[in-house]
Length: 102
Image (tube, one colour):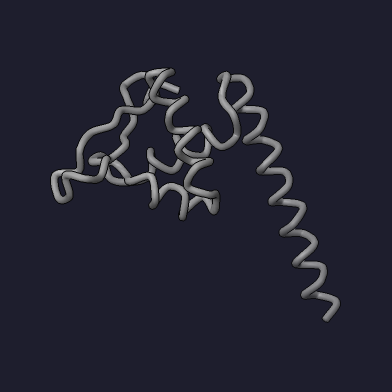
């Protein structure tokens, strides 16, 4: 049991350090941590883009939280939105060239 609790404690410390690092990077870029996470997530997926629901699910945030961050990223010209060719009611979000340079 001692090894398992030490492992868990170590993982929690590592997780906290990674979150703090993400906060710092996001802040330097003028982004919230959620906005930074969205850009990071989309950059690791298909160039066709991702739906809002998939983003909120992957990040473990409520869909309205993801939507507000996405709106801000679109206004900062870091994300672009296009209609999903497989479902005209849905939108796909992808990185702009400016976001790829970050």
